[in-house]
Each structure stands twice: as C-alpha cells, then as structure tokens.
Length: 620
Image (cartoon, rainbow, N blue to C red):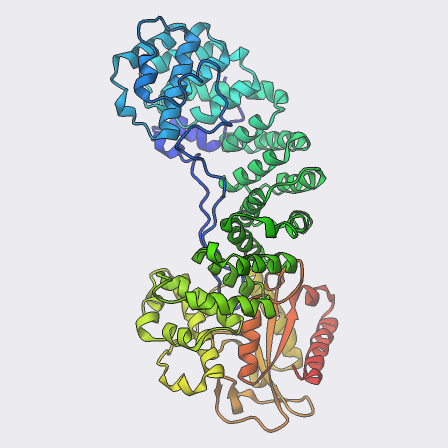
C-alpha cells in the first residue's frame, strides 16, 4: 500500500518520467548574494557577499567524518592503493562496503575521477562481493553500500544497485528510523526506475512506523534535508519531533541546524524560535565563526530574535581584541550590518582591531567596515580617524568593481567623509554611465538613486563643481510591498484632513537628490497651509516661499528604517534627512508603528498635528 504521507510533488514524479536531475538539488551550497538594507527611499547599501565560514578542506578527509575500522586503512590513500589492497584476497560483505565508501570519499574530498576506476576489474570484484552478500547484511551496511555505489557513478540499472534495493525491500521491517532517514537522505536523488520509486515509498511507510525512535542530532540534520518528501500533515509531525529533540542538542549542533535550515530555505518560525530559546539556555556559547554563520543564516531566513543576538554579541564584545583572523572581523561587521544590529561596543572594538592591524587587513575588511558603520549610522571621532587611514585605499585602481566603488563612495557620503577627488571620479560620465545602463532594473534604479544622492552631496560640500557635473537622471521610485504602500497611503489620507490634497498637499514625490517624500506642503508663520502649486515643489521651486514660511517634508518610517540594539535611523535615512534639510525642508518622521496604535481618525489627526507642531517649534 502506498504511503498517504508522500508529498504531491513526489507522487507526480512517480506517475511520469521525470529526470533524476530535478531531484538532485538537495546539496546546493548556501550562497547569499550581496544584500540591500531596507529603506523607504530604495537606496541600498551592498555589503560583501556572505557565505558560511565553515568550509571543508578537500585536501584530506575531515577528521569529524565517521568511518569504520575497515575504512580507516584506505581513507586517505590514492585510488590505486585502495584497489591494490583488494588483490589476492577474498572480500567479505562488510569489507566491500568499507572499500566502496573509501572510494566515495576519494571522489568527494580529494577530487578523484570516477573514470579512473569504473572499468577496473578490481572495482567490479568489489561490487560483486557487495552484491553477493547484501541480502544477509545489516541495514546500516546495505544503506552505506548502496549510497557509495550510486555516488561513485554505478548505473542505477546495474545488478549491484538492483540487488541492494531489493535487499532493502526484503528487510525494510528491520530498518530503524536512523536507517530509514539515512537511506532517504541520499536515495531520494535517484528515482529514475520503478524499483527506486518503490524503495522511496516503502522507506516513507517505514518512517511513519518508526518516527518515535528519532532522537539524535544526526537524524535531525538529515531529516531537515528531506522534509519536502512528505505531505504537510506528516511534515508537521516531523517538525514537532525535531522541536522535542532540540533541548538535547549541543550548541554546535544547533548552529549546524540553523545553517541547514537557511541552506534549505526552510523558514519554520516555530523551529527557529525554539532553537533561539534553547540556545540561550546553554552554558556553552557558539564561537565567533559560528555566531557569524548564525547571523548570515537568520538574514537569509528573514528571522530576527533580539534576545539571542544580544546574548551572542555581548559575549564577544571584550574578546574582539584577541581575534587573530581578519576575516572574522569583516564577517562580524557584515553580519551586524545585514541585521541592522547597532551594537556600539562591537562596532568600536572592531574599529580598534582594524586600526591596530592595518597591515593584516585586506580590501574586504576596509569595505566591510565602511559599509557597516554607514548602514548603521555609526560615526564618532574614532570612525573619522579610521576613515582617514583607509579611505586612500578606495581608488579605481584598487577597487576593480564599479558597483563596489559606488557603494563605498555612497557609504562615505552617508558618513560625510567622501573625499572630493573620489566624489568627482564617481560622478564622471566615464564611471557612472555603465552603472545606469545595468540590465537588472532594480540594480539600475538603485545605482541611479545613489548617484543622485552623491550629486546632492557635491552640491552641498563642493558647490563650485556642481555646474561641471553633467549627471541628469529622472528620479524613480521602486515598487514596494502592498502592505507598505497601503500604510503610506493611510498616513497621507489622514494628513489630507489637516492639509487638503488638491491645493495644498503634494504626495509621493522623489526629489532631485533621489529621496522619496511621502507628502510635502508649505506652512506660513501662523501654521496655515499655502497653495503649493503657486510656489512649486522644493526641488522644482517656481518662486521663493515668503519669509517665515516653512516647506515641510513628511517621511513615513517603518521598523526596517531603524537600527536594532541602539535605535537610530539607518544610514540611508539619515542621509536622506540631511539632503532634504540641505534643500531647505523641515523634515518630519512619522513612525508608522506609533501612528497605527492610535485608534480613531481623530486621534490619528491629533498625532500628526502634534508631530508637525513639535518639529516646527524645534526648528527641525
């Protein structure tokens, strides 16, 4: 009887001839691309590419790979020596499994070619020994032997593979949950023949019967790889089983599980919340490398737990000075930037590390530092000193990627530390034209807005050069989520009760410096609105506003526009405010979270009115 807990996609593959390659994407490596910090003004800061720090050294088989006593003599030997060790002796079933595993390890970790032994008579003898004995083998040996055969490239139609699969079907009742999960872990990639599909379905049936046996970290980690094989009902049952096991996991096992969930793009909030909770209960803590990996994983999963982040980073604040690897510093900075985690102690200590170890730093560390402190709107005397030391490194000669140099220059602009020479270089047609002709529309618009920002900085800091800048771009606003759009419109609709739209209020504009303005209006000395059409917008003024009047820009802000840990506007929003003030605006933020807490329209109108009066009287 076919299991009722097989996923629909797997059933479809059973009923049609789908190539096995469609099922072989389970082992893709996590590769998080440059991320953009969220902003209502769609100006993004790209941090360096992020990926997990833990990588396998393929020169030798890692020491933490579990191997039997039979495999150890072969494990780090060349293929020829492994095969030579099989000559002039009869090979038992367990020995054949061990040799096959040793060959698989050679391919996986040492880059050996399957072609070097697939037609070797000695290899065929090993395979025949496995085939001869597999019916009497224990489940763990059958699982291991079949995996090795498939992963060293033996045909799925070969008698060796078929015998192993038939042995599984004959002995399935003796398979524990560990054996079943271990077999599904690799075998689900190979479902080309009817026999292979039958094996998969019988294994899933057996897992339903043995699910309560699941108890180890190894089972949990393999299970996460194959959750997609099961229907939603059984997935939920398995996910709850994983949660039940979490308290017994070691910290390093929890770290692996978090990274694996990110690799599989499995944003199971219930599992993640429990992982975060139980990790905080452990006496042991992740090391710095594991912590950076966790941050990257949470970034990909869009998961945020401030208690866990504080717990992890507070632990490292005083240990940064003793870090030996520059890559850990850049990794930590980048992770904080991506999570908008403005931990001033971490930022200061990372800055001190870079200042004291300039000779050990590469471009990666300098770029990570500049982009992170800019994104987190973190600037003080120490930052200025560090920037003076590292900014000369940022030249077209040293930074080969135009996109990277644009991001660096723009970040220095946020920090009000961009050198005139670099600013003029980036705003030259030779440099910026390829950036505004990018094939990806989002990258193209992002580049345009950053360049407009930089032109606004040029106008303020070096006005004598503005007439020589021929950068003329139409400001564009990228689309936002429907929730954000509706929230902005909600604020504007309430504001229009105070400031009527048709005559006095302009909405949804992008300034000539690339800053999105939710609403703009002009108030006279008595705080009465003036017709905005008569005077024009701030960046397209038709005539000057009267003395004593104020041009107001309303910016609706969301959680993503503020940093965590120490709450400040993100760097992009701080820059936007500065550019608008330079253009003569009184800038007023409306935190939507606060606005939405007021219940009636009358209360909402009062909330906006109070914000406007406070800003006008404080001279913002």
